[in-house]
Amino acid sequence: MEFVDGQTLENMQSATLPHHITTFNIVMTAISAFMRFLTIILNCCLAYEYWRSESYTYCHWTIMSIVIPLFITTLIYAHVLIASNSGKQPVAHTRQFWRLVVSYLFRDASTLNWALKYTEAKRRGDKFAEIECYRRYLKEDCNIGFLRLFDSFLETAPQKILQLAIVLQNTKSLTYVRGLTFLVYFLSLAWCLVAYNRSNRLVQLDKYDIGTKGLIVQFWFLLCLTASRTICIAYLASIFPMETFAACLLHLLLCGTVVFIADTPKFAKTALTNYILCLAFGAVYIFIFTPVSDGPTKYKYIIYLLLCFLQNVVACIFWIPLYLASWINAFYIIGILLMIYYYLECHPGITSAVF
Image 1 (tube, one colour):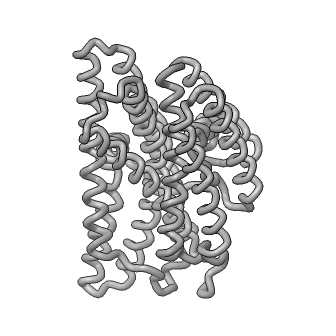
Image 2 (cartoon, rainbow, N blue to C red):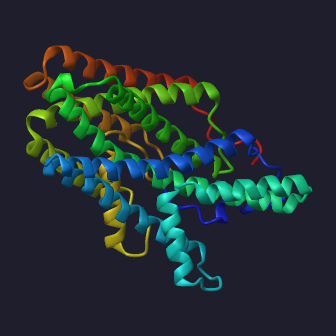
Image 3 (cartoon, rainbow, N blue to C red):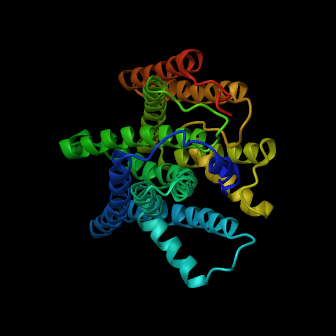
């Protein structure tokens, strides 16, 4: 996926809006911005608790899962800001710095800002301002959805794997609260992917939106696939922590390098920066496949799913007890079947009838 710089949405100036920003959208965006800030606070508190209990390895792991995504998402959004101001009057560095800070602390703040401006323009009856605000809202929502992808898989996922590994080492440490956090994590991870995929389609005016049925089926197959991978990795991490980390790092390097060579995405101007961001996608591919660029994806999905399923099966045969291995493989097979059903029955048409 390449960042939305506004050019792909210019046709909206002369077209009827395909969708509208509702009060529900605004409320959910505000909640998302608040929850982002709350998550950062909780992560810092968690690292402090590990340090106080002298669990220094856990503390360092948690800090890494905060700092590395901070670096990557800041790099990405800095590129977005530079690209959006290309050819325009230079913006003060101080202002850009604070935009980066606000983006990290309140990920959806800018999206919420444009949603509120859209509402105000609609109330005034200013059609031009309404379309412009909607265009900027879509652009920002797509870009932030891209950042949220890395928030989920580089920041949240490693911490949940750590906590799940601790529980698997000692099942007595599983409390109702901790169980609830795992449930919320799996649900939010699947929904993050659904929202990311949908926002990608919304900014491409020649494509249909995903229908409600499609969103539901997509949510469930993403939930099954990510849950299967997370549980499998967490169990291996509970018995072979360093070996599991090395295997995940190898998977990351392999997938990131393949993406860099095969898809040659142009996230930034330099090859090094592009490769770093491809490696970030490699971290996402530890759990799930999501396309980096437009184009046929059938064979990419087949290769990726076979690779991950083979990894799961080998891990289950040699190291994971039967009761847990059955759930891991069942989740993955159900996820694959639901994905096939989605692409056969629920996937929207490629080209919109409007454009």
